[in-house]
Image (cartoon, rainbow, N blue to C red):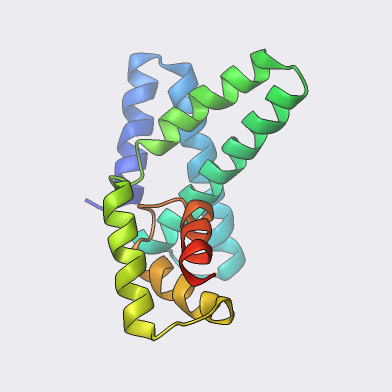
Length: 147
């Protein structure tokens, strides 16, 4: 079953169960996916769907940070609840050890020696860890290794 089918089935389940909060989040994700598909004029595969979901996760994390700074804990809690629902559609995240091993492996494979090679390393890691790691944290690890 594709990720899009899973989202559609979860939307139906949330409707039947009367779970308005989950239903709203799943509908938002499906709307984002539909918007990207219409804009690009092609149907997204699971990798493309993961990209849309990762973007939604990043938006929620940024919103939580901004709302917390602004003293709006009520809105931060709402965004956190949405984030928890969205994260259920991401694959299992890499552990710190697995991430370090992947970074070391890609640096060795690409022959990266300095910070100038960071783009090449990040591109390779993004392809291998799609949806399974926060690329901001990965970037910090790569930068530390290459510095």
